[in-house]
Length: 57
Image 1 (spheres, rainbow, N blue to C red):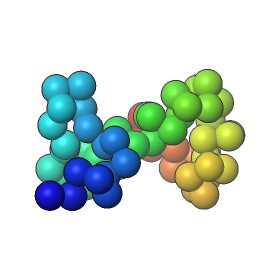
Image 2 (cartoon, rainbow, N blue to C red; image 1 turned 45 degrees about the vertical axis):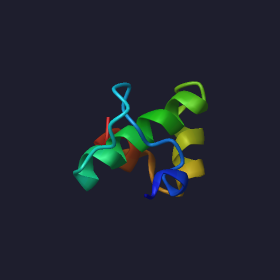
Image 3 (cartoon, rainbow, N blue to C red; image 1 turned 90 degrees about the horizontal axis):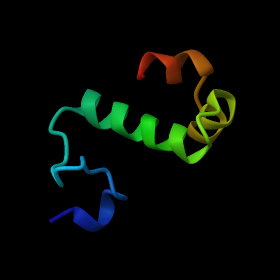
Image 4 (cartoon, helix red, strand yellow; image 1 turned 135 degrees about the vertical axis):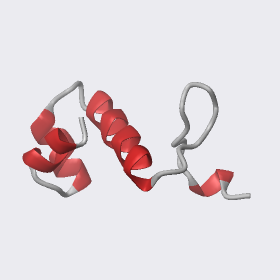
């Protein structure tokens, strides 16, 4: 139903995490990968602190 709104937040199994915490961790990891594992750039893209990014790793 919301597949188009999720922006690709799916696990490799094709399942979307039910828990908000798990979905957040997945998103942070994907953004971090997008920026070449650069913590500062990922934090800027997410508009959070570097410590917040570290929290979700």
